Length: 158
Image 1 (cartoon, rainbow, N blue to C red):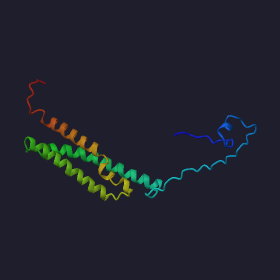
Image 2: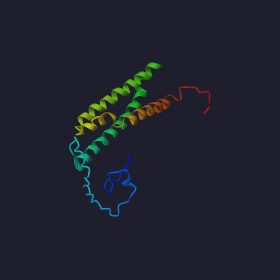
Image 3: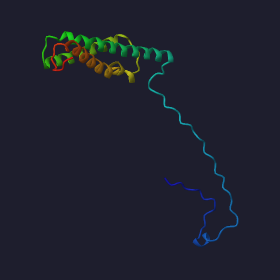
Image 4: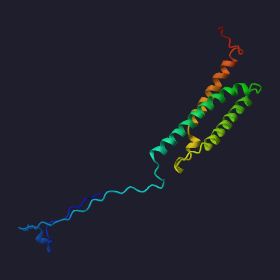
């Protein structure tokens, strides 16, 4: 954007007069504009105190660790629960069980009566979901491998 300087001399009525410099130039006082500080927009969310924030964080941490514990327990239980199912059905049954246990953890989280702002409502669902899924699958694979390692002949003498 171009910035324009304010002229300090009086305008000349004729083009020839612009070539001549006037001996006296009167300084023009330019008033300073007031600097206004931007006012912060009032947030639509009510301000929460430190105590409420720490209580919310404590409950979200509790929910995270609850899901981690559920992932380990459910992953281990899956190895033994679906022992009779063979092939592809075992995999889908395990994934279905994982989803059911996760929905159960959502119901437990709603029962914890967390006072979350409307912007954080989805945290009940998203808190620890990645850790839950990967730890569930990891635990299921490791326990299945350990339980069935003696029954599979790999061709390697140990």
